[in-house]
Length: 163
Image 1: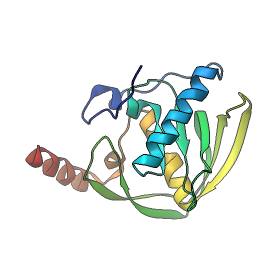
Image 2: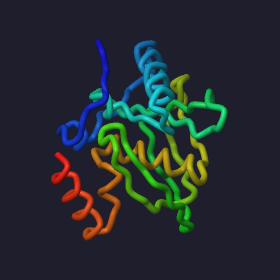
Image 3: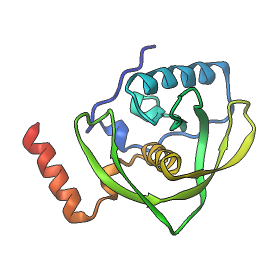
Image 4: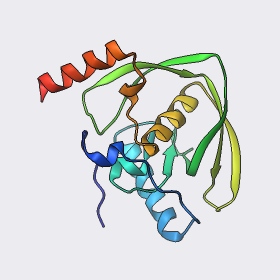
């Protein structure tokens, strides 16, 4: 089965992904493929739904040297800071477009790791932004939905004009 980037506005990008019951070899292989795709973009994260795979799977790697990818199944934010971090976010599902998004600078995330074990991990700044961005994808949300209504309307109007 091949996986390519799903173009926006495909309905799968607006559909919440299904939880993962257990980590299998197929999931581990898919995570490896996701990491290869993320590194080739290059990007800081990728959610399975971006490839049309409707499972709650994501990978994140914000390291400068790469090769530090974290594999997450069923990620869920369980705590977040009141301090905010701003970043120009983009998505391969909507190439050539970005928007400055403000998100909590620190989050604690619970997830099932590559060994199938429950784990909690703290993420800060760009790592926190990327994890939150991927969780949004898994929940059927795009980054531009975090913009104010006026900015979102302008963003969507610009998209319609281009396409």
